[in-house]
Image (tube, rainbow, N blue to C red; front, side, top):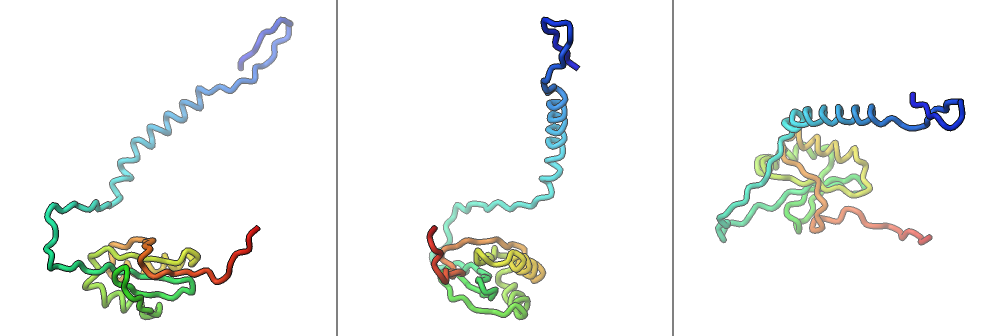
Amino acid sequence: MNVKQDGGSEAAPVAEINVTPLVDVMLVLLIIFMVSMPAMMSQLQIEIPKKSLTPPPPDVKPKPTMYVLVDDAGAYYFQFGGDGVPMPVAFEELPAKLIEKADEYSKELVYVKAAPRIDYGRVVTLIETMGKSGYNKVALDKNENAMPLDTPTEAVPAG
């Protein structure tokens, strides 16, 4: 304990924080995280797209992107391409429809788009159903070209 001697005969304790133990603990934690980080990073599988130097042939039309949509009411839709017509599908029929489309789209990146106010559990259930149906590349999308999923029903009063 630090003791300060002032002009008097009585010694008073000094109210200072000893930062040496704090720095030691922080350095030990830094070393632990630096050593353990490469082990944790090896578990992530990330595919970085490769740039093609050759343009596609002009007569080949690319396959439209597949979207699986969930609106505010919890209804599910398939949409092919950003300007495609959304096709409604019941949740009970969703696994069968996904398996039906798996031959064509299971190796492609498929987007899930959900309304902003939809229950998070519905989106997780949808992604889990897609994974069980054979879709390995699923991404969440905020595509402005896809079907608008939520429309404000009433104006919020100001103030």
